[in-house]
Length: 424
Image (cartoon, rainbow, N blue to C red; front, side, top):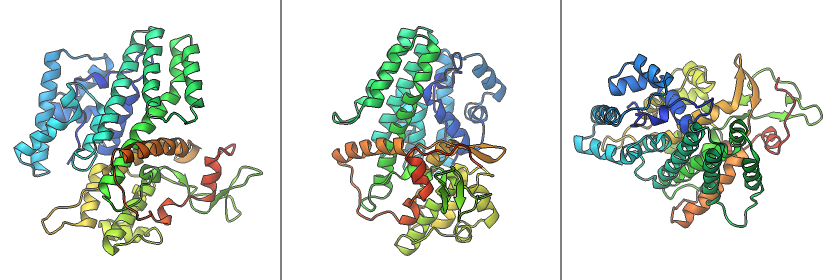
């Protein structure tokens, strides 16, 4: 079914103050990518209010009255209940119980990141309490920062950012190297205007997002593959990276394949890596073991009942790959069990793919910049793995296949900080 946007009071849709946005607004962009439609279209569909009205609301910093917010929530909930009943086949009671667990509904105001985790986790987040809780805390800190900047008071904004930094540091062990956090704390203290303060907060926003996503990653690995596979930062598997065979010439910084400067297939994009992950899971389901190599496109096309050209256009991100697309091909490949139930699609991986895709910056369809964030993300994944394992989260012992986890040589060079001057 179409996954809902947040059942919110409208607060999270407020435009930026002076160009400053709430850190958690990224989740609404992700929802647009997952649905293949603009936010105003989704909101109009769910609330019965026109797209023009929603555009005007965003344009004029709409802040709804309590009665309007309540009506919005009720209409949105009714739409979702109808979808759960019609598309998912849930009873009215089951649909209402899903709504009752929704983070925004429970909180009484919009928690878009918590909602993203909730709706795009198998079982509507029922087994993902840590990820939802962490995402909800991230939402609240994002709002506090945004609201403080709206006051144009630098001391209030500084306190909000320092509060978020304190929250992050509470998840770090006492013996960790906290030099980055210490430096950020100094920069926040030294900033003497709002613009400088917000610029200093870019690193903080990145680390907050890594924390939220890695917590979800750890729970997904344990819940989706119960007592089966080793813990691994799965969301990292759908980050863009250099294609196999690409190396970096250390002397001149050129990208090379077999000693020649490549003209194409320089990078593996996020959705291409997602398809590799999906194909490995399908192979595993069919053969009860991991493959030695990534299945070929023609194999994927046969499993997913699609033409080769469609798989290729999804993989190279020429055609957007949405949640409904994933539902469709997953059901074709997996089928149903004896009770007619299809094993849930690994939706968190799709969210991660759409999140990481923009770190490969394109101009006129050609890569111009690659923002490597694998190391920073993995540090947070290790923190959350240690924390959640101590709380009793269990994993299996089967290692992930080298065909998924192996890194091209050039990828290692870049991860160590070696960046060529320009992409070809």
